[in-house]
Each structure stands twice: as structure tokens, then as C-alpha cells.
Length: 137
Image 1 (cartoon, rainbow, N blue to C red):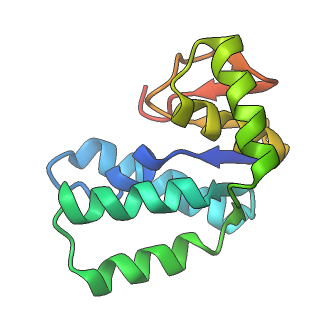
Image 2: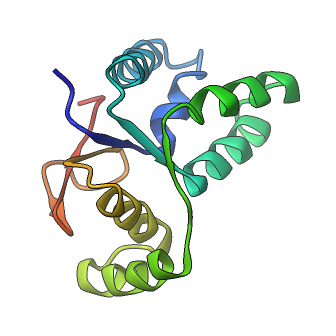
């Protein structure tokens, strides 16, 4: 059974990265599992970062990007509110993270996620009460 998990941008990107077939298959499985179990959470930041990567890195057509964002919006979506931004500033200092990583951690915390699925942060670390898990490890 899936635990409530925050899905970082890299998971969404790998789902469309045909040049990384192993990571692509794993990303699709993670997304499917959490969508079916209703345990996945993303943020407006993750959706924006996905769009930027889909355009610049993956070269996906706009209509496909729109389909993906509509699908990912089926997860719970955490908005980048002023209180979240202020908490991320504290998290940035406390854990010595980039501001953008701190925003992801705080969004996961705000959504009461037990796990943050990310390739970008230290695996098995616990930041602000959220355990980091690399789904590709």
C-alpha cells in the first residue's frame, strides 16, 4: 500500500524521458501507483518546473504538455502561498537547501506527506518531518 507521498518534478520529467527507459518505466509506475491509490501530491511549483523542462529539455508539443498537466492536476496540488514561502525561507537556512528545494520540502510538509519522492535530495534524510526517498535507487 502506498503512503502519502509528494512527487518531485524529476519523477514527472522521467515519465516522458524516452532516452532514460529504465527511469521512465519506474517514473510511470510511481505515478500510476500514487494516482490509483490517491496518495500522490504535487505543487504548483512542480507543475511549473515540469512545463519548463517539457518545453526546453524534452521538446514536447504544447498539446501533450497540457494533457500531462491536466493529468497531474488529478493529484492533490499544493499552492505556493505566502506562509509556505516564509516557511521555506526557514527550511532553507535550517537544512542548507536551495530555496526551491526548501519550497518542495515545505509543500510536502504542508500536505502531511510522509515521503518526498525525489532524485535531487539526500536519500533517507528526514527534512522538516518528511523522509526523502529516491524512487530510482
